[in-house]
Each structure stands twice: as C-alpha cells, then as structure tokens.
Image 1 (cartoon, rainbow, N blue to C red):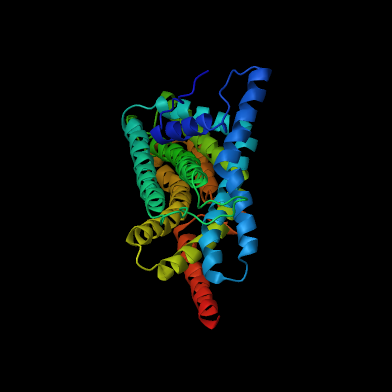
Image 2: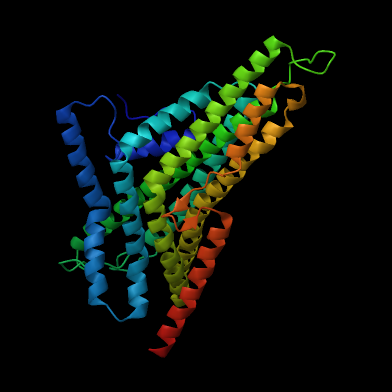
Length: 391
C-alpha cells in the first residue's frame, strides 16, 4: 500500500497519485475501517474543493438571474465544477473496472523491448507533454484569477451568507477560493489526462499488435519453393496468436473505457461548449484589468485544449485500429500456408471495424467533433452578444 502510484506511463502515475492524495482512488490493501475513513476523507475533500462552490455559485446564479454579464461571470466556473463532479463520480464508481485496466496495460507495456520499447517510450513522451501543456495553462489561469482580484473583491463571483468585504472574513474567504481553485484545477488536469493516457495506452497496444503482424515472417527464410517449413509455420502461427491476443486486449480496453467514460465525456463536451462560449463573452466584456484579461484568455485556451486531447486521442485510436489490417497484409503472407493465411484474413476482416470512442453515443471522439464543438460555441457566443446588446 502506498500513495505514489508506479506505472510505465509517467502521466498515469501522476494522475492516479493526485487522485489518491485527494481521496478519490483508495490505495489497495486497506482494511474495512481504513476504507471507511478514506471515503470520509474523500467526501470532505470534495466539499472543500467543489461542494461548497457548487452551492454558493448556484445561489448566486439565481440571485443575478437575467443579467447576462453577471450570469456568465458565475456560470463559466460553475459549469466547470459540474463537469468535474461528473468525472469524479465516474472515477470513484468505476474504480473496480479501471484498476485492472491500468495494471494490465502497465504489465504488458513494461515488458516490451527493442522496437516495441520505442513505441512505449513514444506514447509516454506524448502523454506527459500533453499533461505538461495542460498543467501550465491551468497554472497561468488560476494564478491570473488569484492576482486579478480588486481590493476587497474575491477572484470569482459567489454568494456567501456573510459580508466578505470586511476583515478577516475577506482574507479567509480569499484563501479558501484560491486554495480550492488551485487544488481542484490540478485535480481536473489529473482526471482528464488519466482518461486520455488510458486511451493512449490502448493505442500503444494496437501499435504493438501491428508491429508483430508486420514482422510475422521477418526472420523466417522460405524454402527454395518460396514456402515456409512446418516448423516455421508453427512459429509464425504462434506469433499470430500473440498479435491477435494483443489486438483483442486493446479492443477490450477500448470497450471498457467507452463504458466508464462515455457519459462523463458527453457531459464534458456539452459543458465545454457553454464554457468556451461564456468565456469568450467575458473576454469581450473585460476592461482595463490586463491580468484578468490574460487569465481569461488562457482559460479559453485551457478549455479548448481539454476537449482537443480527448478528440485527438480518440481520433488516433480509430486510425491505428484500422492500421492493423494494413500491418497484417504487409507481412510475408505469400510464403504462408492456407491455415496461416486464413488466420491473417480473419484479423484483417475484424480490423475493418474501427475501434471508436464516443461521447454518450452521440459524438465520436475525433478532430471533426472538436471543430464542431468550437463552431457551436462560436454560434452560442453570437447569440449571447445579441442578447446583451438588446438589453
């Protein structure tokens, strides 16, 4: 039992460690009493990070209902917190499904050598670079919000049952907002990158399966008649079984990810459209406060990047699942016997049905979906502008 999660993928290790620290991923080996205490800690952590915000922002939204400018000032963080709550519930509820997925991928990928190790390292490098960009955008955004507060004003709009403009209530509330914002923002990075890293690891398994299929007969020298010997056929068949098994494991992992995160990602996409819209509206309404303007700009980029990494990983997963058929065809199948050719044909036919992840069964995770979300957000932004101008 330990807090630091060890995984072949650095980003997965960071994400799960963060979830453990905040009480949303119970360490293995806890007794019944320890598990109850850990769940209580997770509930208190949730209330500090998000629960309190949800309550006071919902109340504030009702109090300012009808004022578009003030409503968007409250709504963009409220929607973010609602989406994050959905993802926390999904991770906690599906932890039993996710743990074997994480550990099995770690075991399989850590055992790779040679060209396979290069594929694993490339996956690791890509995911931690995405996580780093996401982390930096988040840090700049939250630091900008914290530093842009006017005198006796809080960084973000919210309703409190006491006067927050007097000391020490102001200082204590300010510290709570900033502390919870930083912690919740980094936790959000961890949850999002955990999902995208698991998709990337599934892609990695597909790439390794394709590598095995493409090199099925590489070191098997055909006879003078251009065919493999019986021993070589048996070896090639054994390799095909390993590649097919890896392909099936990747498809199973993709199906598990779809079952666990389809609904939360759909909620995230729907909320992201609104957040991008209201954040763009807030940008046009900013006057004079350059720090606030810059932080809102990075927040807009942050929300777009959040949607992009989901769509990018899903798009790559679909493409690489289709590449399995090409890899099977590119091996030296002309020297193989009928049985081996039929096995390759079965793999190729199965690979024609691409592995696709969707958001709630409505939108496939693809770059086309990303562009559709951005376009829809812009359309909503123009509607908001018109509503504000007519007021």
